[in-house]
Length: 366
Image 1 (tube, rainbow, N blue to C red):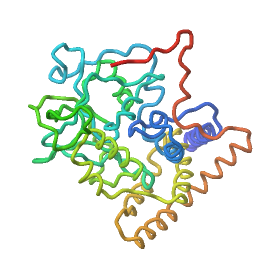
Image 2 (tube, rainbow, N blue to C red):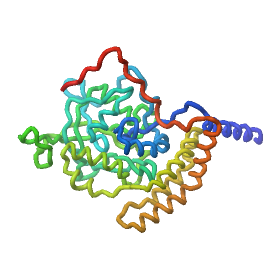
Image 3 (spheres, rainbow, N blue to C red):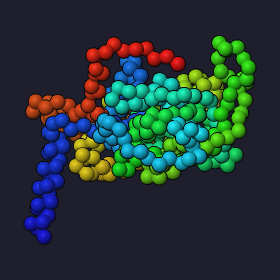
Image 4 (cartoon, helix red, strand yellow):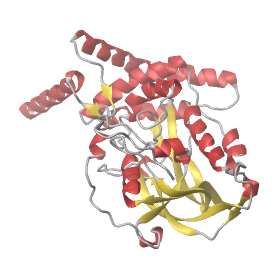
């Protein structure tokens, strides 16, 4: 028994050192989320947030480059009730950050974009918008999901996608992983089409009429990622959802979403949480993903997004104290790699290859 324990300890130590000083290993970047870096807006603000979130999102297990393999993908059987009459397009109900046209388009792999033939504001009766997909507090406490709710309505967008675009979208949300963070479900969706209004008039709740419900596919947080109760989204993430809701003229843009509390940690807490994320990623690489689960649970318990400034300060100080030990280890790990001449951990998939330049690009129309 002593020899067995010794061999196991040696293998664990070797794996730990391999994860610490290994080269060329990429963590899987979350999508979906989503909306946090490689597939999102390229503004300086989003780059700053992506840099802070990268170590943590790498642990989320959503689709990275390994999930977005090149070439044709194997056909999957989709519910016939969610296909258009021709059978070549899929009805998809979008919510959360996928309400943003820019975010949704940029979810394609290898430089491609998600395209659709129609995109209308819509509601899913009998459901609600939930923020119960477990993420990484205090930076990104929760992502959006959809949950059954008697008498409720989840606002979103009804899209018709090609089979290829839908498959790319599903993969970008982690669908190709062994343990996807989302599950596909069928929901009834009523499109909100505009009444006869001037062509240049912006959409609004008053100019929309409800159509008969149709079935559509959407993504619900998988059971293993669901929180027992909703957590506040980050201010960054909520702003993306709010912008998308305004694009579509959804009523929630001026009511529920605009008044929802959100997490906005200080720059100091962001830096500490990012250093803590280095340790989380290292442990994940050596098969110890759950080792820091108690710390994440404690971060949820300490999270406060209410109006009281003293309570917000108390929450930040307590969270800083909680994460300080592992953050210190994370700083030492980065210093050790730099001293050894190794690059910092690379989070997310490798950079996308540039598109071929043999033929000039043609502007898309329609």
